[in-house]
Amino acid sequence: MARIILAFNGDLESRLALHWLAHERGHKVIALSINLGQEQYLEPLGELALELGAVAAQVIDRRETFLRDFCFPALQAGAVYQTSCFLGSALARYLIAQELVRAAREEGCSCVAHSAASKGNDQVRMETAIAAQNPQLEVLAPVRQWNLKSLEDKLTYARRRRLPVEEPKGESISMDRNLWGVSLVCHDLADAWQAPGEGLFVLTRSVEKAPDKPAVITIGFEAGVPCRIDDEAVEPLPLVRELNRLGGEHGIGRSDVIEDRLLGIKSREFYEAPTPTLLLAAHRDLESLVHSREMLQFKEALGQRYAELVYSGLWFHDLRQALHGFFQQTQRLVTGEVRLKLFKGNHAVIGRRSPHGLFDSRLASQTNFEFFDSKWAQGFTSLWTLPSRLAARQQPPDEKPASER
Image (cartoon, rainbow, N blue to C red; front, side, top):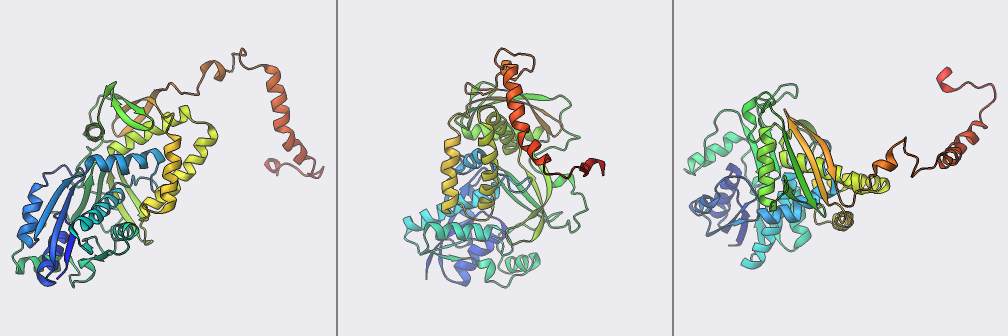
């Protein structure tokens, strides 16, 4: 009889997994529940786990760690997967895996378990992250071992054993929520052409119900870390929660996209991510003020690669860790403020300033020659056009330009 640490979030699959491990397989299960900003009271999860058969239960708060060690590094990298995935679910899985490994070490367990879906990305992320930290740990995934194929199979299993589960009501919706946003799947939307109902969303207002008056906010950064709202110093947790509230009120951060999952399957995903939407817009704009052109171009390409690694389960990979060091170095001068206007689902940068800004209106002005001699322009233009003039010599004399053919 093995002692097992189970990641337990209280959803149907995790409840069944706990009961199955304890009663069908006879394991001693220690349930681990983690507060990542689900915005619900989690203490009852410990009691629920004990009721389902756990020998012990831990409910821990890791919101600050989640932001500091996972979300903010992704922000500084400018990491967005494809068009709208700010990687909130993926980042959460890495923290959960990290805590599973820690708990297993402290409890003397050689096995951990999870209830991630067998067709989804999370099983790969969890197990890859666990293996990278402790390859000796065995990982159990009951959803891949039991013979429960459908929602009705799972509910029948629970009813027959009189397990405390909630009966489904209305649309069949899966929701994963944390401080970095909400990921939603509506199982009743079989057609990608079909529009979702307004009841699907939990964090953002529709554009029609957003305020008719715009809001203007200023976000301040110190070395790439958001730390102020409207000139008031704010700790990471209240800052993120306030931006979620304010952005959600104005309909910011809602998206409906077709996304390529890790296994190559096309999926329709609904996201609500007010905070990362606003922070990324402000952070990128501030970087455009303090970084050189070459730095911005190179960083953008590496940011895309960083996002792919995070999405694909490779948070603890040596390449991701090496890229983290590079991005940390780029943040030294990313200090300043960005002003944003929020209105009816849109956000626009309307001002920025930094003590390290490279913008000089006197130099940028085309009418001010105090800092830019016209003779320089003549010499530069002659040199810049030289390759084009040399290439033109290779054209046959009678060949017309492409635009005239």
